[in-house]
Length: 405
Ligand code: FEO
Image 1 (cartoon, rainbow, N blue to C red):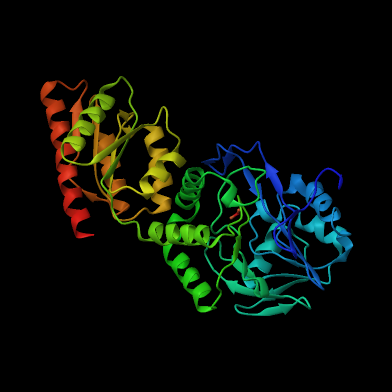
Image 2: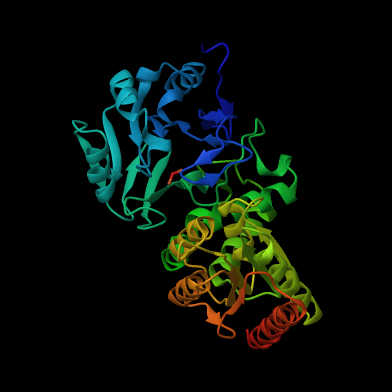
């Protein structure tokens, strides 16, 4: 296999030995329309190290890529920066095949790996700031709890100012291009934003802390090598992605107003369209996202850079519509910040859907405009006027909020 699945050079000492998953379309509920990569890195220093591993089905490809440049048995150190199984699924088998002198993870990582792979012992916990000498190179570890699991840490290859950033600065993008500078900027920006929105958005404080720790460590980053997607190696690209993270952490409100809804017989949709007209007339930028055509992870991506979230639901069996409950549960967990919003919907005999949407938006700390627009059965001209006025009111509040931000 080593003549087919080969390592790719990142620097003179670092090789990419990961896997490209061209097939993946669902990553625990996140629509990965462009597939993904599971990146692992081989450091060919005096002491050879493997940084992270890959999802279980790709073990043979990982070992083949390693074997294309070195006998896997020559690996002395394995580092597990993050124990989620897209990076560790094959780790017990790799440890068995390689027989390294040491496997390192954060303290929480050793516990998480023990709980994932019952019987995998002997993993050594490293502390924040600890270094491990590879002879002519040095690995240094930065603990980054909750970015995005309790076990998460970063590793740096000190002499090369190279950061192995595990999920951070990554994206789900299957590509045979190793470096970000060989890919269209708009694709990078979209997929990085989608990754941040769907994986990292609830963890703004730990992310800012982690960014601060990288700065404090005085590392002038020359290469940022994440565990998903392309590697950042040009200064301008590193500044671009770090700057984007700073902005996404802040989530300053914009004039974009995301209108999410589903509909049973078209009534809630008619209201959504009228609200969209009102939003536009009020100076906002409406983006209607009908749940029959939009995936929850694309909605989360739009919400990341929005200022308003307006949600419409019919009432079904005295409950909000199941698809609306799905997306609200998802968004509530992601904890978007600094949003104004409103609830609306059509009903037959009890307007429970709108009430439940409103309660959920309140729980999400969305600043609500109005009491929620409820329309019995099919909206008439006056109802549509009311929906238009709701759009205008949300746009007006958004204008005030944006001016203040
Ligand atoms: Fe790519 Fe959190 O695993």
